[in-house]
Image 1: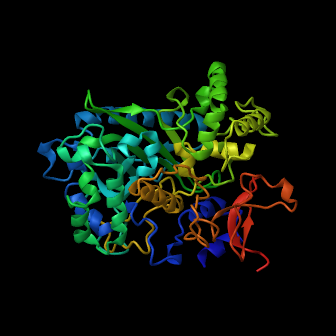
Image 2: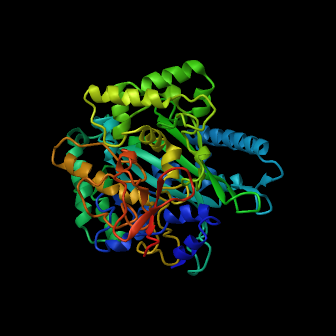
Length: 531
């Protein structure tokens, strides 16, 4: 197996290995049960039909005059609603280039293969030769803890693609480009636009989605049924329910060279829809801690430390349902990939939590964190994930946009989707989502079932690197839980010295947790050396 050849030279190929561990599919362990059943729409032929119809980006974003033809990017970014998006992107590109020019020494930066750090060609982003095509539709009713009257969210994932039709043959280069545009909708609007919406409930929305898991349809018949007014879940998704757009763009790429390892940088930004101005305005990234700004401002450091270590907020952090106030957040993030476990300097929490060998003054001292955890437990908090300083730090990075996308992502993406413009799009051999995406489907489906059955949903979640299983054994032996490539914890011979936050991260029989070269005891499950 090719991955075994990589393992033989793990030190040399470390960045590549970490990347591959997030890409290699393990879905053949459960060929009869797609993990995304009832929670996402990933069938490439159905997505093609939806993209050509009511879920093409033009029908979602553009005025009536532009509905008849695919919405190319020159027209997309000419829309008045998208003017703030283009302006913000241009500013961020400029900041990134200036920052990299300062950081680089004898290396060059620019568009094209002749440069050491190769920038994304921004001309393609605003070109008449590119457009965003529908790559996936995802139910995120598990996010209803942010506002239950809206029943959570529904997300349309669009992938930037060159125009010109499908690839001519299987060996042709994909026309897709490394950027996604997520259009996020309220699952249920605040304001009813017709009589049916007055009576629409979260239970009905969830019921429609879960019912799709029993359908055997694909392609055009599936698309048609999904849009059915009687029981189609997509019939409830309407342009007037738009909340925001989210952008994830591979802003630069550096091939492996004599002076650096392979690296790609991903730019993440969010734009909330302002209904008064009818424009998308740049917003703070959810839980994306602005480390640089906080570390430079003593007052802000003290406020953030006090706020986060308060018992109720610590409990929310543990459950994964925390919403950090905007004053502590960034408006953009650069996520370097792969980061794996080998370079803590690239983690979003670097410098925030005290380490034994760190000289800088951190925000959170280990003694303060331990005292806060004890205080929260005395107030009745039952921690599921954060049971140590290490668990606190990992969760702190885990809840950020960049930290989550650096963990078990395909490059910097969680749902790149299948390329339905290819000659033979095939969901069984091309993985449309990351290991983190698939591992989280059991939890999301459990929340949908609670909505459907009029029960109180449990919104808690595990770490991005290790899923919350909800009592299911469906992921056992796969890379999503404890199989080959799963994230694990290297157990100490003295059980008392094992980190309480991670000691349950074990590997399946025949596999052993192996370090990837960092000081952390977090590793990956591989075939035991003894075998």
